[in-house]
Every structure is written in C-alpha cells, then in structure tokens.
Image (tube, rainbow, N blue to C red; front, side):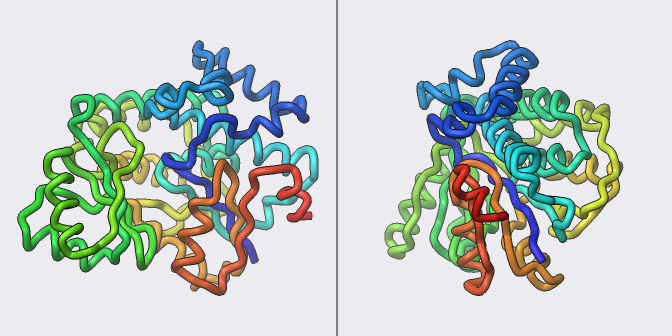
Amino acid sequence: MFSVVFPGQGSQKIGMAKEFFDKFEIVKKIFKEADNLLEIPLSKIIFEGPESELNLTENTQPAIFLTSYAIFNVARKEFGFNFKKSLYIAGHSLGEYSALCCFGAITFEDTLKILKRRGKFMQEAVPANDGCMLAVLSNFKAIEEIIKKNNHECYVANDNSPQQVVISGLRKNIDLLSEDLNKLKIKNIKLKVSAPFHCKLMNKATDNMRENILNLSVADIKIPIISNFSSKPTTSGTEIKNLLISQIEGRVRWLESIEFMINEGTKNFIEIGPGKVLSGLIKRINTNANLKSINSEQDIRGLI
C-alpha cells in the first residue's frame, strides 16, 4: 500500500522540472497556462531565476505547486501510473494544496491563484526581513522546553521528524535562540524563507486568507488527505477549507501525519515534486518505510 506526499517551501531550486518541460508537451502546456493565469513569467523564474526572485514566497508557492502538478500529470497521463490506488495523500504546508489539486478537490486555476495570494499575504504579514525560521536538529519536546526556559518569543512551526523541528519568530528572537542552541551544541540553521510561517505572527495572513479560502470551491475527495493541522484524515471539502485556514498559523504536524499513515497500513511513500526533502524526513521517522522521490523520467519508470 502506498501514499503520496507533496513537498512545501524549501524544496525549490532553479531549473526544477526542466527535464519534463523539454520532453513533454503536456508540461509545456501546463507551464504556459500558469504564466497566462498569473500574468507573470513564472516559467522563466523557475528555469532562469534569479534565486532571490524564486525565493519570494508569493513566487515560491505557485512554483513548487506547478512543478509537482506537472510531474504528477506526466506520471499519470504519459506513463499511466494509477494514483487512484493511493491509501492516503498529504502535503507539507503549501504541498497540501498540491495534493488537493492533483486529486481533484481544487481546480488547477484556483490552486495557482490561491497560492499566489497565500504567498503574498504570508510574506506581508511581517515586515520584510523581520521574520525568520530556524531548522533545529533536535526533538519537539526538548526544543519547546528550551524556548520556555529561556523565555524566547519563538514558536514550533514544523514538527518534522524525531530529529528535526522548525522554529518561527522575529529575527531578533530567533538569533537569541540560535545562540543558546549553539552553546548547548545543538545544530541549527536558518532557512531560506521570507517570513516566519505557521505561528501566530501569521495572524494577518489568516485574516486576509479566510474569505479567500471560504470562497474557494473545494470538492469532497475519494482518497483521504491527512491534514497538517490535525494530522488526521478527511475527505470533506467543507472540513478541508476550515483546516486550510487553521493551517496558516498552525503547526505542521508532519511527524504525527506520517506516523498515522504508517500505522494505518502505508508501507510505501511516493514524493511528487522538486527535491527529496520529505523522503529524508520520512526515513528518519521510520527506517522501514520504502521511499520513491519523483524528479526525473527515470524515477517515474521506476514506479511502473
């Protein structure tokens, strides 16, 4: 039994999906449609950069989705892979939107436009360069205790694996936390993101996105999606909307989500999108999990 997962911000790189774009007409069509719908040269940004432009959240989010969507459709339409046999689907942060679109809950057009707005609002929720995110190689409880003990105004944004959490906060507070972690010899690294996601500093983004999400057409789906916010499955379009609103400020419960899928029978995970970030996290959660990251035609052939 397999489940399908879609990556989030941080997986982007210049040139992602170029191999598919060069070879498959369906990908050229998808990328051209995205450029027209968003009225920006998103394809050019993805293939040529500059990196600073790709890393702007309002570009990163639709770019990663577009890449994942293109790869998914090559696997499905060009190679006939049957994703309908998936036990569950999930996505990391914006990857949840990729999962919902690929499995029929939200249209391609709506997903592109909602992610462009989501990225813009999340980027603007905190003044430029004031916010920061820090990846820490430690477990959730240990880091939460350090934050509480030292009165740092920081927040656990992603509980990614037993050995990695991501912390959000204002840059000045993240710097203080990083100093304390360095003293304790706990490895940490600042992420290439433009805002402190998945914490209460995103409250303005939640307010701005609430109406956008409530007005979004989200269909019920046949294959359950595991929500970042609840780490539980749902197929209800109405419930999905509410969870997507909560997700903006809520912690990404990736560790719990993967453990749930494994406990419910998932033995194999297919990561659809740029990079292998999720595969690395899943392997740290359960060393027995079988993982396939789809980044090339050869990777797709390995599924068949």
